[in-house]
Image (tube, rainbow over all chains, first blue to last red; front, side, top):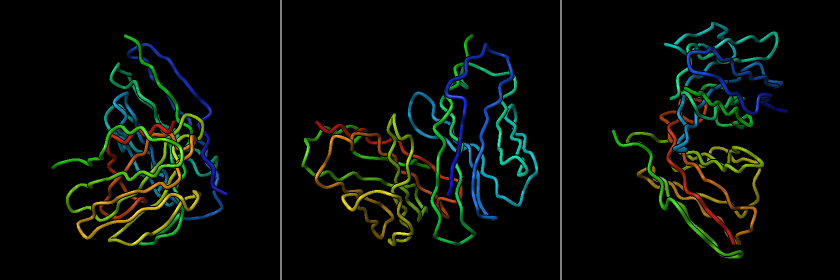
Length: 118
Length: 113
């Protein structure tokens, strides 16, 4: 069965610190997708990244980077030089499925609340 | 480009009543997915519609239903409301579906008393 675990419920850092949000997943499928979403205090979820199970390349986008390791079933998210505007709840999600397919649930982790203090 | 809009933003209903929530996706998006967010259960997938067809449904009772119109607008209906249905209901639109990038609306906050 699918499962996404974000063990860190809350993290508090001081501005300019680096912070890593952990995500561990469980799936029996060989084809799946992993996502990170950000939910700022305003409430709207914002898409950050999508990664398919066949692409283990790490990705960097500005101050954000993602480390995908199939061997440990982890998809961790690092914010470098954090800023107050990074304060939000971050969700990791897993979807089993395939291109063009319609089956497969989308499971979210419980989220990690990140507070960045000035 | 206008974002995803949801109406109403806030709603208070009584147990046993029914409610209909509306979602207008981003223009050109054919996929609309619905999610329930509660403090206890977190974010849970309700269902997805693509070109007026329900593609998949999460693990929710039959009281939760939805539909999508030809203009891609979607409605979600909850009948015989229970206290546990109090939640933030989020709608997301996507070009290709929930396996791809989704754009979320601000949500409808439903309170059942």
